[in-house]
Amino acid sequence: MSEATAQTTAPAAASAAAVLAVPRSGWHVATVASTRRETPNAARIELEVDGWPGNAAGQHLDVRLTAPDGYTATRSYSIASSGTGTHVTLAVDKLPDGEVSPYLVDEVRAGDMLEVHGPLGAFFVWAPDAAAAGDPAADATRDTRPVQLIAGGSGVVPLFAMAAAHDAAEDPTPFRLLYSVRSPDDVYFADALRRLAAASASLQLDLVYTRRAPEGWPSPPARITRDVLEAAVIPAAERPRVFVCGSTGFVERVADWLVELGHDARSIRTERYGGT
Amino acid sequence: MSFITRGFSGRDRERDERLPPGQTLVHDFPVLSAGPTPEVDTAEWEFTIRTESGVHRWNWDEFTSLAIDDVDTDIHCVTHWSKLGTSWRGVSLDTLFEHVETEQEYVMAHSYGGYTTNVPLDELLDGKAWVAFEFDGEPLEAEHGGPARLLVPHLYFWKSAKWVRGLVMMDQDEPGFWEQNGYHLHGDPWTEERYW
Ligand SMILES: Cc1cc2nc3c(=O)[nH]c(=O)nc-3n(C[C@H](O)[C@H](O)[C@H](O)COP(=O)(O)OP(=O)(O)OC[C@H]3O[C@@H](n4cnc5c(N)ncnc54)[C@H](O)[C@@H]3O)c2cc1C
Image 1 (tube, each protein chain N blue to C red):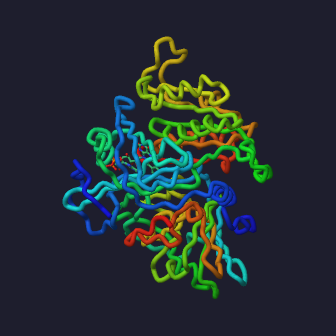
Image 2 (cartoon, rainbow over the protein chains, first blue to last red):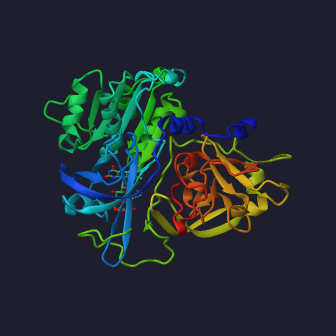
Image 3 (tube, each protein chain N blue to C red):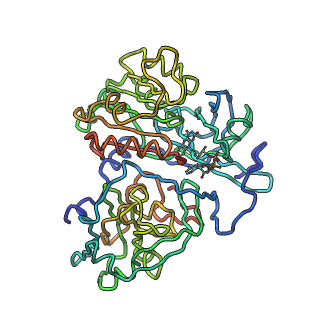
């Protein structure tokens, strides 16, 4: 029993917040700088956000839409970009029966203004190794464990932000991304991921196709199984930090398997997008 | 500072007055957690309340033989979904605190898996909160916090700690897990106390 009450704080969370010094969130006016098809079912939206304080890789924001009669709808979207600028990239998957995502994918165009609240979330984030960046004070808290990213569909958005930040910082931490998509056409940030994977020090990329694989792909399309997961992630023995993001069903399944495969539950961070 | 969004008309045309501002009605039951779902066996489960003078504890059998309430309520998640008319069974915090003496006014709820969330004791008593172990007539599923979760329907649902294992009384309010990560200390959906 003493165990139950001894744990008075969530230490990992507290230290992450301290290290990142995440800026306070607030409402901002965002102007759509550009929008383009990301995949047949998704759009990439570039925003210029007035007063944006910058954000860490992995954070999200809330988008609020207001109808002429005052009705509002608000949804959360991960941020595909990170750093100190006022430029923010989103990538949105269209849910057929959705209210907000079809608007963002099909209707929004350059010059439109949106309300956004953020940056939000200080837990599902990754920051470059401060020690490697020359901050001697960071040596004591240095976390040199490798990082495993696991994405399903649009869940790649915050993980892409982490992989890009890792590359930009020339951070030495080994990074590996396991990414489950329906078909080769459904890969978000395909060119950038290919580039990160080609610079082999940055990222090892493992794709799993669930509906249609590219010509000559060694395995037929199928959902991730426990065996595929085990073969394509950094082994538990190397104690990776793991970030999993996607639909609820995907995240539940993957996180359960990771624990069964011996990964420490405390090293697994998840972001669930809803849906199944 | 709200302004009209060009080209947006919205889909949910009827506004239900049970819906707090900024919330959207859902009919499924979304899951949001920071890590893997803990699997807790009721044979090992226990629930404790720790005060300045000691620890009160219940094992599963003791707990489920306490007075049980049927609770019909709306729930509101900070990620903008609400679910109306959900039905639960659980033990009222009034029942749990019947024989607990304390001067301390704040509570930290602790969960299996390490999650914590803070709530003032006032917000848990007088028929406002339960430790629930059934949802919709079935044992509460692990992904929704089973075997038992806190149910504090008048606050955002992150206060309704899943996999709850105990409450620790405190002299002062202190942030729990999501609160340290940017969520509001209190969390009233009607005044949109989402983030600090
Ligand atoms: C932290 C966070 C980050 C996110 N980042 C992204 C992102 O980068 N890209 C992206 O495409 N999506 C993202 N999402 C999902 C996004 O917030 C919306 O849920 C999604 O775009 C659907 O909205 P909609 O209005 O089109 O559908 P809705 O009209 O809300 O719903 C359509 C159907 O899906 C279900 N559903 C939708 N959203 C949810 C939800 N959040 N929880 C539970 N059930 C739901 C509804 O019950 C309904 O049946 C994120 C969600 C969270 C919580």
